[in-house]
Length: 236
Ligand code: ADP
Ligand code: MG
Image 1: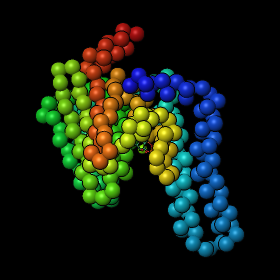
Image 2: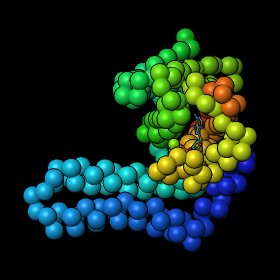
Image 3: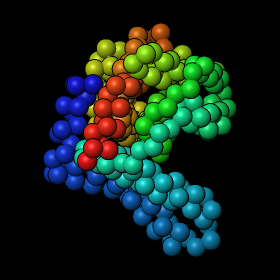
Image 4: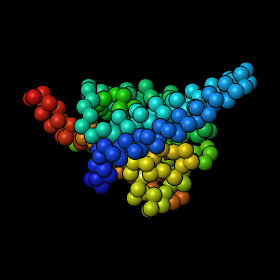
């Protein structure tokens, strides 16, 4: 994770943040403006379609703002003891809907043990959803997305695997960098956000991927680091 943390540091520079926000928000704004103008010039014409596009672009702009907020380094989020498996089961219908929409299969393989972690539920949901979405976006058709958990004496791991095309070494080296994307219309913020969230939870993310052999992302939470932080917090 060290390396990824290095890329984040650059982001704290106000100038760079401002420049990127400007760029990322202007795109949806330009689209919205264009459609509003169309609607004014031709009242009554296909406005339902225009409105749908406007709503989509507004959601996109909102999503970008959320991502930027998650990247803020000294962000403090409230955490609670959370049953990871309960959270994963709550998210299953959401992941299932995404899988069905794209013609993929979703496999859940949760460990038997009950696992309490100190989590911010909203952030953990965002982290998992970003990884699941990436996996589903990477797979051409009828792929298999696997969500698995493992518990060891000192750590809890969540593995998100896909049967997609995998990635080259060049992509693997850059994928956690903010704004790195190989997708048309991608923001390249998803994995940077994942790293930022994992780091706030004393976690790390690693990736195993080869071209043609699919991809596995592993999010690892150290139990010791989590309880040390909890102890330090309660001592304040
Ligand atoms: P975005 O999804 O907007 O492109 P991300 O930060 O989520 O941004 O991902 C960055 C890049 O990492 C993607 O554009 C893609 O090239 C690569 N990537 C991420 N997840 C996977 C995956 N499961 N399989 C193959 N490539 C991936
Ligand atoms: Mg993404």
